[in-house]
Amino acid sequence: MKVLYVDLGIQELSSKARKIVRSRKHPSQLVPCEYLFGHKDPETCKSLVEHLSACINNEQDRPKNLMVFVHPLCGKGRGCKNWEMVAPLFDRANVNTKVIITKRAGHAYDTLASISDKELKKFDGVVAVGGDGLFNEILNGLLNSRNKTSYPPTPEGFGYFGSTEKCQGYKNDGLNNSTPTSEAVNVMLPVGSNKSDDHEPLLSTGQSVGLDISSLNPNTESSTGDQVPSVSFPNDWFRLGIIPSGSTDAIVLSTTGERDAVTSALLIIFGRRIALDIAQVVRWKSSPSAEVLPTVRYAASFAR
Image (cartoon, rainbow, N blue to C red; front, side, top):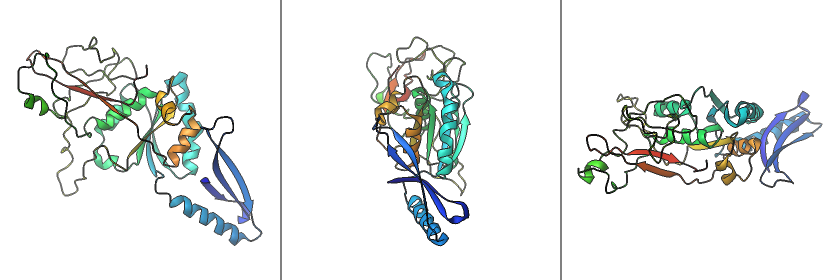
């Protein structure tokens, strides 16, 4: 039995525990159930509560602090409504949440791309209350300077006459030229110079929400004695969550099997994990100086 939380009742004569069961009609859906139990001896009742609370606190996978991005316009405005519905569950389970209501396209990306490693380490993960686009925006905001990986070899026929080693030397550097425009919500359009990339095959004509890798230097943290070790991915402690509120919710359906905000919230609270394949999409283009400028984005789904 998975216990969500437990309360001590009036005059310490009764206790209330909420556990989670699976829906009979929808096996993938989780449903909170409340149980009231008591004892004539207040100390016995208190002891039961303390025991259950200790069991909950000993579950190491449960997150303690989460950053939550809520998309207010996704899925016909369901983002805020869904968060208002599940927020009490996080509160009762003693999960601290820092809630950010996105105000523009790229808000989540910019926040995570610019956050210091010291600040990021205060959280056990990031939760998207929205659709697949917001999740991918968060994913790229985290990975843009923290995923330490080399680019693949330069494709032939891209007008680059320099050495392959020069291109490999980019690694996650030299790409900090993206600036947001003001249109769509769920796609990132890197704007390297003043030239538009609207017709590039791997890009949407939408706004810049952060599916681009920047040239943030991993050594930009303070070089003083208080320097915090950099955060890199993949790692074992940080997790991403999504509470479905979009129009398709392909990522949630492929991971939980249920497009249900409460189910996803409960799985996040319990610290359930599942591996998710992430695709690295590298786009090469030739600049006027015949240099190859790779643009990298990460995608958890390709649903449109």
